[in-house]
Image (tube, rainbow, N blue to C red; front, side, top):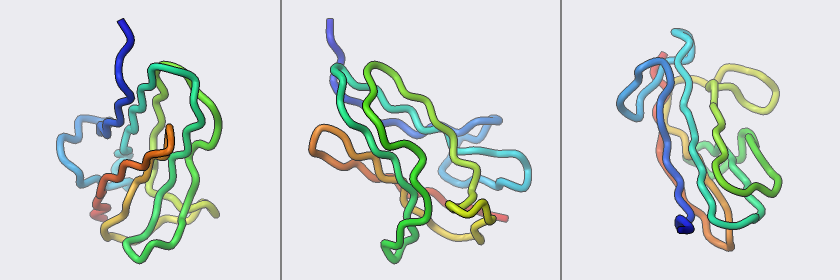
Length: 102
């Protein structure tokens, strides 16, 4: 049986909410599941809409597991604040808010 496209954020290192502290080694896990091969783009944005980092931009089938460490595209620590993780696939975009607390 084929499963529908699913996007789920999970926290690694036993984080159970949308807040994480990269300085403690915490990461945000991004779980993307697709029933067919499709292009997937996973990006992190500031609340202003500014693109900060692209975590994945390629085709995938099945389950894709990524982790975001709170860094931007230049490898710099992002300050405490609210960020948006966007997953684009199959012509649709799903977003989730994530809070960095340092």
